[in-house]
Length: 353
Image 1 (cartoon, rainbow, N blue to C red):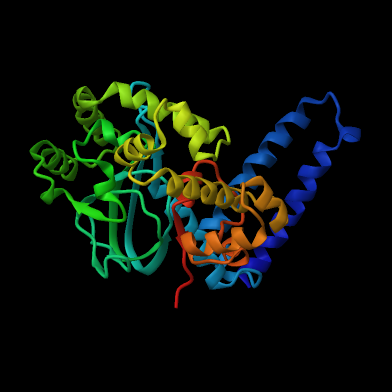
Image 2: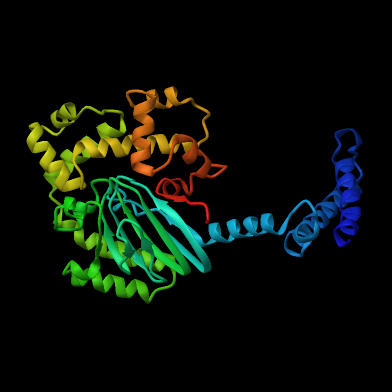
């Protein structure tokens, strides 16, 4: 077997490298440093050959299925990119996402509530949504949701997604954001020629950074529409929520509004009422802790995330994700990545049938 022959070369080299790296055997001889450097280069070259030249496929410790998973993971991560907004737009935009994949076998992901409005441009095959019971528009404005949906995609995937801050989208769109609640609104129906022009230019641009430049030019041009008075009030409320405040009456006081006024202003600027937003924020905190694999017990998680008790946690988790805590934990990535953290807080891989 080829892998057996290659291992007979690899093992002595590893021993040799260990031998020369031993503190007890180090000497002042210049040959030591030359041999050590040569050994490292040889080991690196052999390792690369093993990975990409067929070693994994021939070694009995790596089945074809495991190899496929390894290579698919690498390919997916290479084609997914997170780009942060400029300093000027950071108060309004969380992140820009770019994902490109070719020849994708039919796969499913569960989209769970994130607590943010997003703007998506799809340049590949259209995606099926269980919530819509049909295919999504090619490009759409996606409001805050209070329910989960399963997305099915295949073939060529190429999309750009703008994730706004909770109160950020209101700066760029005239309609009350609660009109987008739980819906995908096609750009064709918004009567917005500038937005359609942006869609066309993005469709013609392949470089991610060039796309970000086009997006930011569009957004900066739109900032003048912002009602700065309400923006300051709502941002103060969002900051209070991020700092752990979960009482709606105290949040209304932070905004210097009566409860009724606060509920109306909050709903128009965020997209959902304060109670629903607090539930989503609590769910997202729980999801994040599960992603980190903290080994916290359910009562500890309930206390940390401001649930009344374990039963309350399980009920809301089921409502927002369709999973039990054990099922969601199993669906989380084995190792948490901050780079993909927000993306993985939104999309959960579903097992293939």
